[in-house]
Image (cartoon, rainbow, N blue to C red; front, side, top):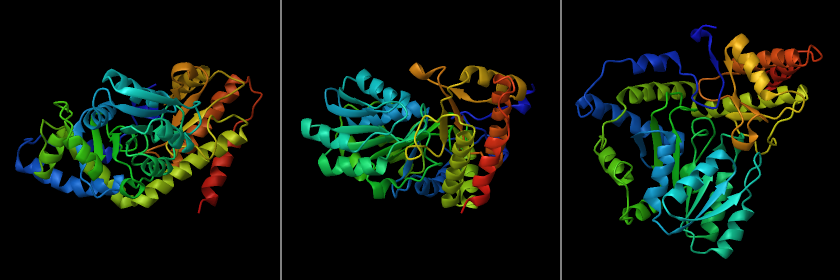
Length: 384
């Protein structure tokens, strides 16, 4: 199988549009020169709409996990009490980062595949009125759950003085978010998911309330000090050497979003989610999450009658199709499909069709392909 035939349908990294690849191939420029200053001037206002904020969106040359750690170490100090809502592997990562920085961590673990309830905030607020921050995951990549961060924000701010800090890594750019209107205090994402770029950039937006907390934190880190990034971005610069090629690609990503229209981008992701879920329902293959909790960017499938790893192997070997497996205790129990960023309903139809062939082979021919594909086609044809 040629590498050019590779079909990448994992929840990140995701495929890169050819126009974005081309943009990243531009000649290198000086990171302190006029060209970079002008590039940052063009990027700043356009990122705000994706985050739903009037605040400047910081651009760090780092991974999505660096964004999570930056959110932690800038807003809370060692010994301070925080609540971490753990709905999967990446909620777990937030908890590990907090533990590593010697915070007083209160965990609330939710069964994998289910979203967190806002009632949790009220319960913990009564028991722990001194909580400084609540950490939540918007889309839990390991399960395909979309947590109700708007409702969580309302609960946090009505019950506590805490900041709400949200991991939006596999959601931003694919799921609608209104950071300012919803009351999110720190929102972060990475470049390699719905933002249609290679790994290497993370983005953070910070509310005025959170900036007040950060400015009074004397234990901020060196490279991940968000005040440095804010102050330099105000001058159309960066405190450290930026990932210039990625920033060039980011401009083309934002061009694509503008051409399609941001609301249409979100609608496309909802359509792909519904097509995918309808296909598996028609195939009588269980989905891990409920329709209410399902993410528009990732779908987790939990088959009862075949081995997910065997299916993934067939699809990779015969078609070059990459799906993701389960993580931690769900390894070998589920497989995950990424439908975000540079992905269209046509890509979903191709993916479902190939999965049906794989399932047919695993069942020794006792299942008939095409039913799932037809169900996905029906959703597409009837979409508003």
